[in-house]
Image (tube, rainbow over all chains, first blue to last red; front, top):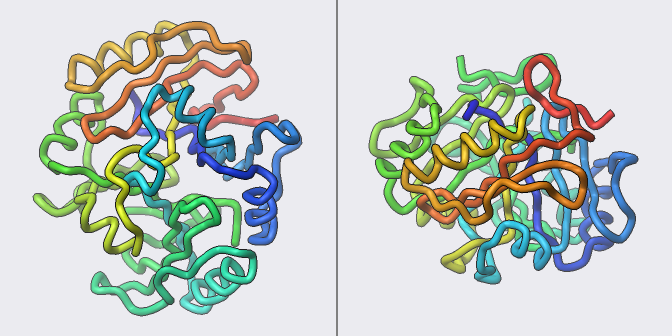
Length: 140
Length: 140
């Protein structure tokens, strides 16, 4: 198995609400999305999908604990101001700022928003992982 | 907020067990990993991390429901044989095959394994998303 992730699917309770939230953050669904069924975002080398959480649980053959399940995504940016801007935008769009932007013990700056379905995103500046021209983190 | 994911952190109960599992699948930790603390995998443009689940919950400022939380990852490959091989390898490494490889309603072929911490991975051939030279899915 190669060291790659092709797709991250986020289970949602209300597809339209979730889509509105990510649209408000500036994301655009791919034309192959199926209205009322599934949303695909081309995230530059991998796909982020929104799909009904019950469907995803059934397809993944797992029991749904109903809350957070041990996965957190992160979105790295270049400037601390970008962190604060994105957190504010997430809050305005109906997300919850779980942790405001602040310096981190590892020498960076980050905050966390939680989307309307309870999926947390850390928004971070990580000086140890510079972003390349495609804004992909380089571990060096 | 750009349409990108920089990091996926998987919360784990036992870091060594989780690391052994992903090593057995063929993954190699990045040298910046901190033994006993956190593991980073360079997944070609994004990072996959393994970190203690309680630490991740605290850092993400979320309550931990204790099971699956509505996120499923997928790893796309080119051949159906690759799906079956990876599922067998995951099972041999201590994972659970939740769904064996089989044709899907959307014209592909996929199965699901669940890692030792309950994180499901769909392993799939998706003819609608051809993989480029870096094996990144192209939505067309």
